[in-house]
Length: 239
Image (cartoon, rainbow, N blue to C red; front, side, top):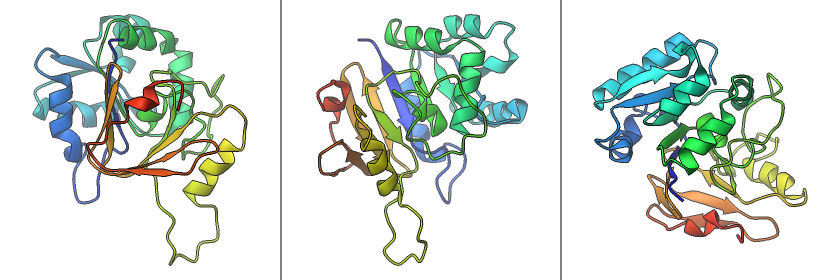
């Protein structure tokens, strides 16, 4: 399989600017062969402002940005893309827009068959997985399905937060919500990516970068992983 993915937990890390914490990984990921990246701003309402933010940042890294919302034919834009970056925002809005513009199948084909590099951040990482069922976002719109692009056979919870034992907040923790998800039958593993963490997927190899993560699997104890860990086993269906 030709897939190349860079799945980022968050676009902004405390104390830094937009994509600053992972800019070296971005440059290494897209490399010198990619000259222009197709940006998908569907997760935020103001597509023009969001595109300017992405365009300004990628320019500092040596890449031009074309936004899918500026294209007359979104499917054709994906078909011609050298690289794809789907930004964060509201996951439900993002997935609905991807289906509304009929680009889900073409993105999947370009990434899995043609090897076009795909980068996602937050919501853009969510939609790269099996489904958006483990997003943190409010369902402000209703996509036709929770099934996502399916570039990897597991789910991700971006911005994963550990329980705070000193907090007086009595609401559910992120871990409890993921456990509720796994109470349902046939639910895949969920990778909790903490702030600053990234998952690099190259073919059938997956490597954790940046920060730590926590893996939740149905009926199994949770497992912690350090940066540099080989998570390739997640890319098989037997995990």
